[in-house]
Image (cartoon, rainbow, N blue to C red):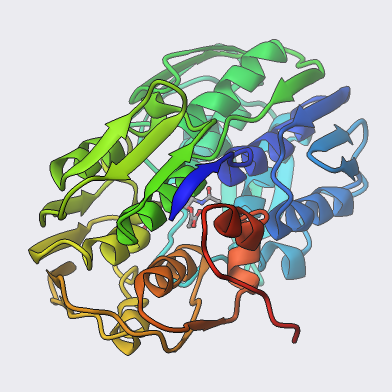
Length: 406
Ligand code: EPU
């Protein structure tokens, strides 16, 4: 694959930004929002609470001046994990929220203890009734909070509550992902007082009111990474023109290590000038190698001659897609220790496969592009949740890819 492509705004950052709009009664305008199914689903959740949400291409305008309910609709919450962010926002605005445990990709256990630890520390009462979580507080008070794990959504949810709490909140072991940093920056633009975002310690001084904003979503490092890995898997030369290298150090370092030439003068260009070398990868929280690129990275390593290992340390079931890669002839063994051993260099042959979730889908597309012959991917609805214009963008890079109806 050869050529240049521009990626959309970040899926996850945009989802957090939509939820953040609930924190103000004023209008919020979001730009560079990706045109993907998850944004529509999140908009549906916010509308069900009484917010006005208008989607016009990549611009979303929201206003949550009043809420018609503080109970998030279970059937919508079941569809995407980010919907649980309405809890922190509703708690901050109205003092109460009711929500079921959210759905999302089947990639391992996805508890909510970090969220609840944070809400309780801020003075909220958390209980469960008929499978719904009830979170209530007559008054939120700032606190020093330690997270057992730097949960991404947990950090954003507690941040939402803390911006309206009285006094100072310090979150220790916070998630440092660029998407978390971005939503904190957005909140600062709305009048919040936050410091330390993008690091493991975030400090928040509560304010009485947040105002509206006009904010542009950062570009999607995971989408960018997927195209760079598709280029790598096919021995190509791909440039993602609007990728932000400062968000992608872990991928850039690994690609260089396996022999890909990287140029960050304009966006990120990855050129495979020689044979690839095998390597070891560990998927961990940011700034480590992202779990969301673990699957396409594994697919790309099928081209590196020799034995590579990939250790998934975030989600215990994030290797389910390996069975799909086996159908293409991939030699990968997944041990009980969560480490995949990849024997690279063997030829891949096209076959019918399935997209099991967004990133598992990215892995089969990357491997399918590298395989000889034709690969058919079923259940591409998963890919539509996270990748805008996937086929046209891949075609731009030289892929032969079409979508079949039905
Ligand atoms: N965890 C806990 N306790 C909690 C929450 C999480 O122990 O209260 C553990 C989980 O068991 C898991 C780890 O923390 O082992 C990571 O979970 P985290 O809470 O950080 O993930 P998330 O916030 O639910 C977001 C993204 C995921 C991405 C992860 C990790 C959204 C909507 N989802 O999920 O994105 O994999 O962070 O970076 O932002 C995707 O885009 O394909 C995707 C799944």
